[in-house]
Image (cartoon, rainbow, N blue to C red):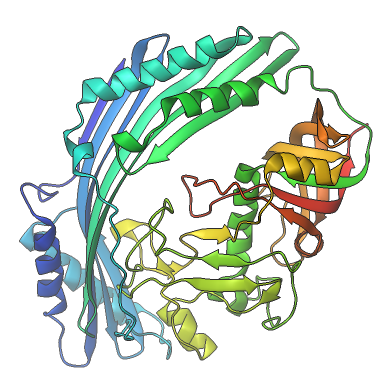
Length: 464
């Protein structure tokens, strides 16, 4: 067993309260000089990951961290610096480093920190106190119980690659000398298992998981049954004949596709010429059934948030409405370059980086059909359970789409034989326009996108 504990920095968190993060950020922003803008982003967090194998703890890691990222805009130059400590001396040095970095930066007339825009933040309950007090032994027991449930789920389950418990608690505050003040906190936890079924030349894997804000939200039986189903239903898979058909994407695959789309719908990508949707606002870019929304104010979304990474209130942004492209996502900088306003869509990878632009809670508005009804409507097609090479096989500029896949053929409106070693190909443009059914089975996933069952016509499948 491997046990790891990481407590980064002497000023990591101590007995600090959430309000003290905001107080520290206010103090740093208040050190702005004349003609200078200062932003302080302060965060602290704790996470745990436990992996078990054959009823024993294989690894257990627990980490606490805290730090600050500081941006300074002086004239048309910007500097950034960060530190993994909240000690007063370190914070002062970090501000000095950010000022020094600004002096060496290139001039950019669009630089500047966010300013209050009048949008009120929604109230979201994203924190569970019981996660902090949930005993480590109970977490271990949950991971072991999941392993046992998967093994007992089907006699064809040969072993598990992993059975895991994970959790995280994150608190942050951002304050600017331009009038922004915001703080937030959230918790998340998960159970996951990856099962191996069959053996020899017919070995298949499948994963299942459950996510939530706190321990009470987790559904161990669902995670176990999902892992068992996904591993066993591909046993006996063959390489099918090539052809064109309707592909039905499982929720996880739809979410992965939406994550790719997100990169083409942010203002930075558009400005850099890296989006196939540039200059297409107001045009039909998808089937009428498609309404695509980024809504961090939805408390059920895994990445829900009251504020973006610059401290502006998040909001519900409708990107595609009834198939028509309506808008792109912007942070403050990209919006100024584009001659528009921020959509509250600044994101950042913690205190170690300056903010960029991105989606937080992307989802399609659900339809009215259950998956079984979609299979019946499709008649003949392919249920796509997993894909490989998604990022390398998709070109966000041309829209070309070609990925490896596994799944189950649909015959006579019902699931039939499993298939593997196939490639499915099209373009993003044709896929969006070719949507023929949207499921009602919205599934919250541990990512910036949620998924549902989605049927897309005229997909090329390469097999034999």
